[in-house]
Image 1 (cartoon, one colour):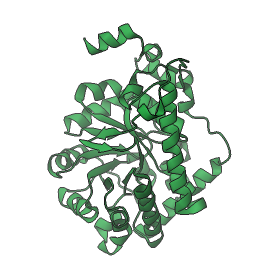
Image 2 (cartoon, rainbow, N blue to C red):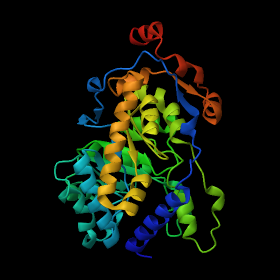
Image 3 (cartoon, rainbow, N blue to C red):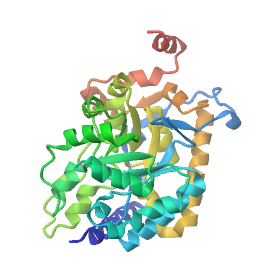
Length: 368
């Protein structure tokens, strides 16, 4: 099994997952988050700034195209289209795993197109947690990347027929990369979630940006299981914590350790983006939905979709009276259902989220 054929398999199976859910409302933990509507708190759209700060850089919008692919002729064409969409909409973009390039530099162009067609955009290179500083530097240099994303994917690797079986060196490798690469380091899961305990551990390793990447989007356990002749790992489908649960779980460790949280995994709509921002994310990544739009309608359809999402994000902020991304952290949200139960089991009071805009509470938070 070559890297190229594996990457093509991943794209084919990921698009199939998205199409299987097309036309239906997928129940999600995001549906357990409801904003308390305060009818007189709306603001003016021209007062709202959706800009956000990530790793010392100012992003025009709190939305980014998250890691997808690269390493084959077909995935190179996908990356070219994604780069054009990022350039035209002004959103940040992360490459897919660059393991294929690090093993065979003949596929370099399938990744390099991300910078060629988006010369001034914020671009994030992506490597696995086995990468050495030398390999990470090669990835960063190829893309002239602004940041490095390190993906951790033990569940996917275990189910993958040809996957890794030893993850014991990951903490040491991540610490070395955080110390040496010279650009901001982002650690992300691939759809199984990062707990608050893991955020604290990553902070101790020197990481200051974490993408919680929770369950609910592309399910790589199911994808890899579909590539196994016996499909014997079906029980692991749905493994992990949801993005919403991860954000809540990680909020206090992130604040205590000065870690910026990003969110991805199962983001279906612009409202899910705003929900994630209200739970503490600095920005929100989307992969599977944008890939599905691209495959169905081409790059112009994807540009129109991202532009529409950006408009809706800003207009929901208008309704909420939030003139900035940080202001969303003071909106009142009701956490119900399975998400509230997750909070209680993890020792987090979900009721506190319903009263965050109380003036007396805000004074206490700002003047502890």
